[in-house]
Amino acid sequence: MSFFPKISFHREVEEYLTKVFRNNELITSLGAKETESKYQSLLSHLSHPPAFTTVRVNTHLSSVKHVKKMLFEEIQKQFKGICVPVLEHPELQDILLIPAIGPRQDLKKHESEVIVGAQCGYAVLRGAHVYVPGIISTSKFMKAGDLVSVYSDIEGKCKRGAKEFEGVKVFLGNGISELSRSEIFSSHGPVNGMGIRMIEPVYLSPSFDNNLPSVVVSHVLNPQPGERILDMCAAPGGKTTHLATLMHDQGEVIAMDKIANKVKRIKQNAELLQLNCIKAFCYDGTKALSVEKREDEQEGPPFLPESFDRILLDAPCSGMGQRPTMSYSSTLKELMSYQPLQRKLFTVAVKLLKPGGVLVYSTCTITLSENEEQVAWALETFPCLQLQRQEPHIGGEGMRGAGLALDQLKLLQRFDPSAATVQGMDIKALQDSQEDDLISLANKDCIGFFIAKFIKLNGK
Image (tube, rainbow, N blue to C red; front, side, top):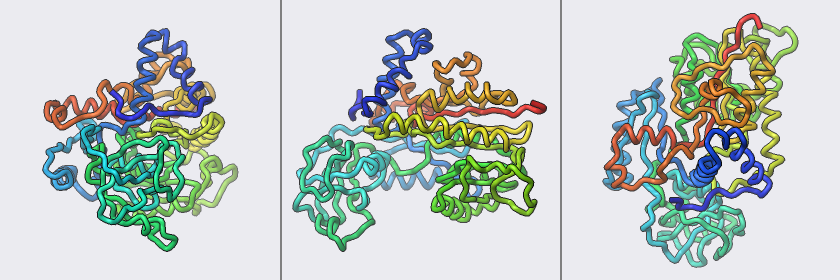
């Protein structure tokens, strides 16, 4: 049963998605009733956070056992003695999983209200406190130390500084204000720092940025020590550092992104994590192929053809698999703009890959046009490419509707939140669950994500 309303879209986007998720191939395979049921379940799951928080352990600096022990102790303190397990994933040895408790439906709402922006609200549902930049409105007489109820303005209709808001808002839980209303909205007031300390969130969950499928991607690429790897659209850099860790910091990981601040952050993270094999460059991936011979001393882009052993193209995408999202603001035109960009990047990636090399393509979206249709296009456009079996394969198979054969769909990995049959978890359900059941749920109840793995054949 849904606690939040299903995700909403612009009408044109909703009409487009309805056609995608009720396509003839799907209906022929599953039947109209099951097809519709899965689609409605997907819409509902997208507006709720995943059932687990994922923590990737940097095994270059610490052991999984040590981090697991520290996390368990910290969660016990944070959750005031509520016993929440920290699970090791049997197929991903550097992953820890923490169940999210919620939605908690028995929380009392307070008279004093705080309205936050949608993005801030999504972070709160994933375990964050409320920081000042995310606050849009507070009750008229709110003082520091007041008990307040926090709501998300999911449609973006609330005016900054408003003293009350009667529009569509979603309850996120209760907290204690760290600042008064006048301090938050004063022209000389704080522009950052904590505004509301959440003490009774609707979802009880520690705040981490990782998600399960994005960790799977690096394992699927399977970089080896001594190889030359390209992370083509690397920001924010989590996959870059994961690849370097899997290679035991031996070889070379080239990270590219066209936004300078993001590249600077990747370099800082590499230094912080003591990973020396990462080299990050501010560069547009669509222009990363060198058409002329270049000086061998030049280590940055553009690169000569066939320069890399393995390439990760975690492509810019419509991001429709991100959770929780209650209102998707992009237009159909914006949604459709990603496919041609992805194809430009993919074309460059194929040319930069050595014969015998591996290319992994991934997105955090749910559409056919950015996922299975891209695979069908790639196989037709580049005879040198062949789909490869993925290891580990813990998501579902690819989605029907792009004309791919069943054996091809089985080689793809689509993480589909609608595959999770339960929604939400309370303490009793958690205590009654076997560890295997919890791991199975974590594999399904995650963000929407897609992975395809190709090998470039010799002599084609």
